[in-house]
Image (cartoon, rainbow, N blue to C red; front, side, top):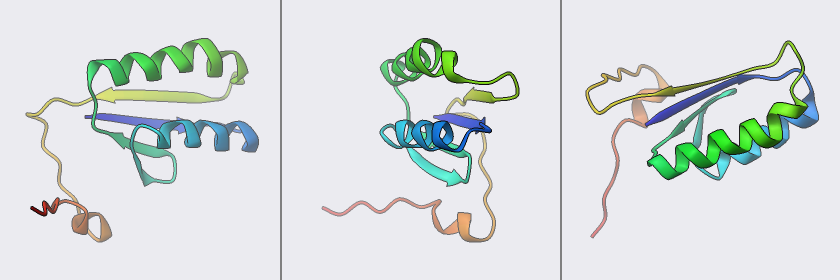
Length: 90
């Protein structure tokens, strides 16, 4: 899984960046996306950030990508706890 966190000052660019991330995962906080990844997703995301968004970012903007392994533990509270379980319908 990937966690992508961002702090982008320009409203238009921030909206465009969040819409880009919505193609690959879902928002878990205002500026934090969870992406169940494959290596190809990671390559596509990093390539787009480096080759397109990177040129548009201001000096104060930041993007962090955290690659989490299957052994990482996730604990949730409040509303987030409701999203922990996945439903499978056959």
